[in-house]
Image (cartoon, rainbow, N blue to C red; front, side, top):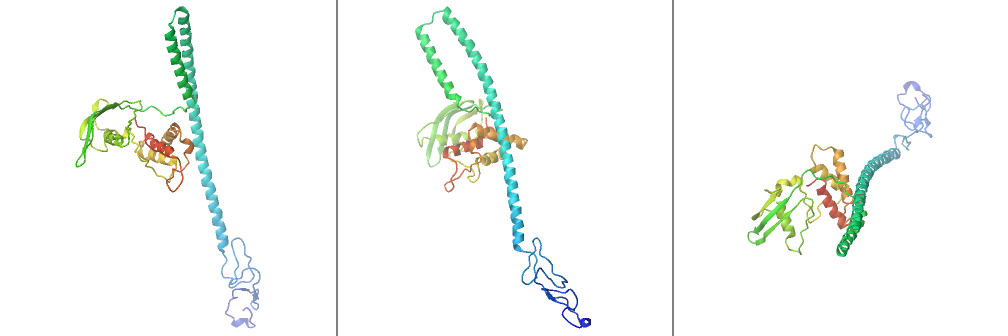
Length: 327
C-alpha cells in the first residue's frame, strides 16, 4: 500500500505521476513516464511523449513527422514515375525520327543517282545536237526554281504520319441555304475537293466561308443543291469517322496540357480494338507532324492563366482532329 504504514488494509493502487517500488513507498516520477500502478519510471522512446499529467504517451509532433516523411516519399515516387514515362516517350520519339531521317536519306540518295544519270544524258545530247539558246535559258530557269524549292524544304521536318486507309473526293453543285424569316444566305455554290490536296476557301469577312463549311459538314441542312462523295450522292455527316472538323473557335480543355488534350481525343474517338500503346504512338506522330511536340507538357492556358500562343493553340485544335486518322 504505497505511502501507508498498514499494508493489510490498503486497497489503493500506486497513483499516476508516482512509482511504487514497494507497498510502503510512493516516489514522485521526475524522470520518464509513470502511469497508474507503476513500480518504476518508464522512459519515453520513439514517438512517445511525457506530458505534465502523465496521461498521454503519443505526441502530435511525432505523428506529423511520420506523415511528412510518407508524403515526401509519395511525391518522390510519383515524380520518378513521371520522369521515367517522359523519358521513355522521348526515346521512342527519337527512334522514330532517326528512322524517318534514314528513310529520307535513302530516298535522296536514289534521287541523286537518277539526277546524275539524267545530267549525263543531257550532256550527251548537248554534245551531239545543237539546242537553241532560248531553250537553254528556259531549262536554266527551271533548274534555278527547282534548286530554290529544294533549299527551302531542307530545313523542314518530314512528316511521320502514315497514309490514310481510304480517300474521299467531294463534289458539290448549286448549294443553297435559305433561312425562314431571314432570306437566302447562300446559293449557286459549286466546286470539288480532291483528296491529297490543300483546298483553301478565301473571302472577306462575312462572305460565308464558315457558313459554307457548316453546310458541307452537315451541321446545317441545305435547302438546295447536291453533294457527292466518291462520285455517289451522300451526306458528309455519314462519314464522321473519316472526316475531321476543326471549329473556328478553339474548343479544348484549357487547364490540361497539349499532350493531355490530344491524348483525351485519341482515347475517346479511336477504335476500341486499338491498344493503348498504338493510340499513344499515334499521339506522338501527330505532335511531331504539327511541330508541337516541344510544348507537349505546356498548359494550354486561357485569359487568366498564361499558356501557349494563339497559333500553337490552333495547331492543338487541329491535332485533336488529326489524331483520329481522318481521310
